[in-house]
Each structure stands twice: as structure tokens, then as C-alpha cells.
Image 1 (cartoon, rainbow, N blue to C red):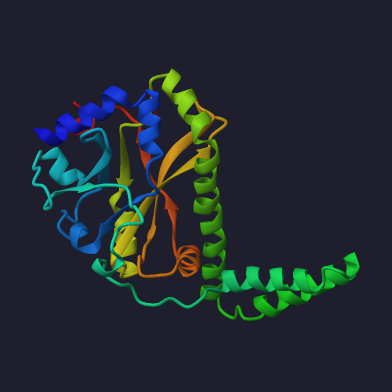
Image 2: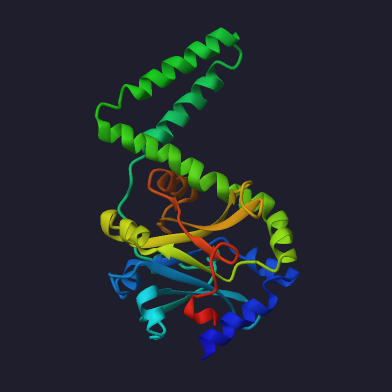
Length: 269
């Protein structure tokens, strides 16, 4: 089967410098709501496999129901993906509803504006201005739901933005450590529920999956690669998209195989 051959082709180079170059060749991949709806809703996980097709990294996504049944029908049960590149035509992508700027973004903008305006003032005056800015925004939180949304937006910053920058800066060190142990990742297990959250509860039309690094000093390795999942709207301008991602749930939700999962995924045998 060609799919399995391409996955094996990644296995053959994943611990080499060429494998690292493949991982650095793009910024993420997407899954549409229409693709998600073709999977079995009783699934527990989505399996994301890394593959090498014609000397280029690609990915295969399939729900565990069809994977365990070995029911591999391209573009129906299993979907082939490549890294997003700037040449993608945004007009071909389904639009998402416009999102208003969330309270957390307003909070950061307010504090930044006040710091700039008071930059020539004394320290006490700057601190007073910041306190006034905090109160101005926090006074808008009038319900437990609003407070929960504000807290979630802060958590999104911690859970996704920081690890994505960590991947940008420290992926060479991560790769060197894992390659020496011959444990560079082959596949990920992603909870099916996280896709449900985006596509059903948030009515997303597109999900973005991207790499990040988590700090894991108490584990076998100093950092762990992870796949992050968030809403995606390719029709937004870059500044709007950043606010859009921060305003909505982003999760570090995957289990990489290897090093933190056994080799029991069907297409790895």
C-alpha cells in the first residue's frame, strides 16, 4: 500500500538531518469540517502519521475506528495533508464568522498603550496608569462566564503561543536529543473530542494543526514535541488571525509516538 510505504519512508530518515529539514519546511496543516464529518463519531482518537512522499514531508490523518479496521480510502476515511505555504489560494477556503476582539487582547492593548503614553513619567506614575488600565478592562467582566473566557484566553497564550515560539527557537536542540536516541516522532494520537470541540461547539469550518515544544524537565527528555489544535480562518489578515487564535480555545492535546507512546498504531507495523 502506497500510504504505508510513504510512512515507512519517513521512518527511514526521521532521525537524520534530512528528517529535521523536512520538519522545518512548513508551519502547519489544516483539516476541514467536511473531512472531519466523514469519520466515525464514536472514535476516541485521530491518528496523525508523518510520511515521506517523493522526498517531501506529508501527513495522513485518520480516525482510530477506520485505522483499526484498516479501511483506508483516500479522501474519505484517510486524508493526506501537506504543510501550508503562502501560495495557497485563500479564496478556495471556507470562511468563518467574524470574531470580535476579545477582552484579553483589549487588556494587552490597553496596558501597552498606557506604558507608551507614560514612558517619560516616574515609576509610580507609570504603575498608577497601569492599575487604572487594569481596572478599566476588568470592570467589563460582569459574569462568571466572562471571567472564564478571560482566563481561557490567558491560558491559550500560555498553552500555544509560548510552545510555538519554543519550537521556532529550540527545535534543533530537541531534534539532536531525540535523534541520538532514535526516537524522533513517527505519529501522534490526538483526542477526537478536541476536534469535536472546534467543529461542533465552535462551529469552525477549518482547524489548524501546528508543532510546538513543551518543557518536560522531569521526563526522559528535556522537551517534547506536540501538535496544537486551534480554529483557523485563512481569509483573515495576519493581525486579525493572531487575535482570532488567542481569543479561542487552543490545546496541547497529542501524544507523540515515539517517545511517549508504544508502536501499536496500525500503519506503523
